[in-house]
Length: 90
Picture 1: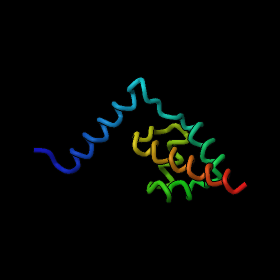
Picture 2: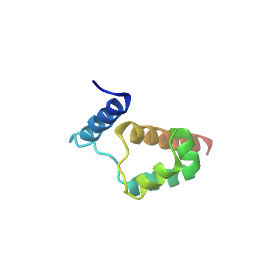
Picture 3: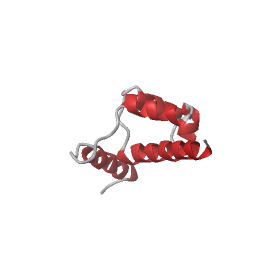
């Protein structure tokens, strides 16, 4: 019988395995930091938009932990959206 905690853990484990699929490469912490800075967002702003903690953003950018695919994808979409908006304003 699976509990909600074990189900969530299983889902996270599946996502970690999916990170290793050759056709999808997660950005490094340095790349995430550079993209955030280029988009003009602070750690707090990026965390608020992504719905995660500032601690998570910092740990991802410092390569202390690897973001789940969904979280990495969300950040990349936020950074692209902000960057596109800045380009359109110029």
